[in-house]
Length: 480
Image 1: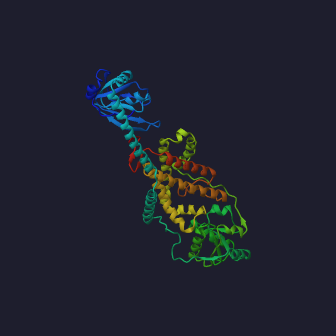
Image 2: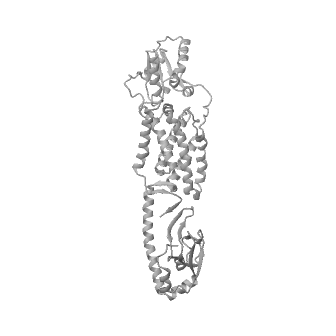
Image 3: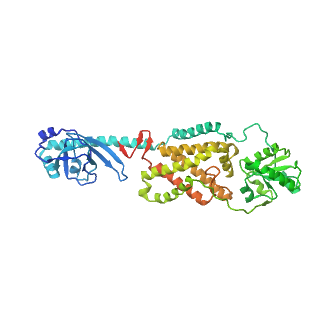
């Protein structure tokens, strides 16, 4: 079905003698006069009323082609080509039509070359205008699918601005770069010096890491004083030194074993503040102490999972959706893309909110993975949750969805790399997904994030409904 010309019924009746064929019919509003895909049977001339011509795809996306009024006609293309109807026509109000059968239409064409020339000319005009519309639609789709650097700068820039402003007024404020101050660094000693002191038993070694890391492996005979619980555990630390008959001014060598040196340097400073003057920090690369000192471990219970709330349950849905994506018809569905957007948006907003409120806790979780240098931990802990929040909101609201999907996909890839790193090195950590809460790092956690990664790919390729693009907000019915 193509849109009609504007020849008046009266003119056609006088010049082409259509008044002698067909019959007059009246249809109520909402009537589908011809349906897309049906076999052609009749040609119609509109005498009164208004009609709408539209196409509808297999996914249910309706494209409105044109409106018809008195004097317009339709149905001739399918009769001439013998092909099924290419569009549907619906009455918007009560309409009176002149209905002409296929045999009558053929007879009129055979005996009226003028009408045949008129239809040929009109069909040629439709082809030209159709080419223009196709070109405009292709350009529109290309622009819609383009991702500019501005889109990324928009999301990342908004995230940075909100992160900095919120941190300024947050009671749990943290510095942008940890240890970016004029404080003097503690005295550092090499691994060789530390090993010599250890053999001569001239100092007490203190592990500054969390208890789970200490139990997993530590220097044999070392005490554990987690810097994150310093105020709570320091009295017990003093008691243990007394039990070991060590003087208060005994030399202390602190080690932390993380790439960011977050724990050992901070603990050394805290101990100095408590009056321990002979505090030193063991130098060396990440986990180098494991190869220079005898080790021991304490077999303990596995880390218990902590509740993640709604997001924890929603995380399993991407695994199920991964199975649906294997079905081609479902994989290409724009409605699945909308569902993926809403689901990912809720998950990432839920994860982001708790980390935004407690950036110091999230920073410690970042340190646990042992992959982030010291200067980047706080910046990452401040900006990443806001990027999760903004990208999640953009997905739900339909704003720059392809850009938001790629950012969330990138976050998932980074997180999956961290999870695999933790699994390979056997780090006894929780994922740290929601503030203090989390679940033990397992391969199932990697599978969950792989499911979310595939969801972002599906959004990137097939999302085209309910989105705000550069041309406006696109609903289910698109006007071209």
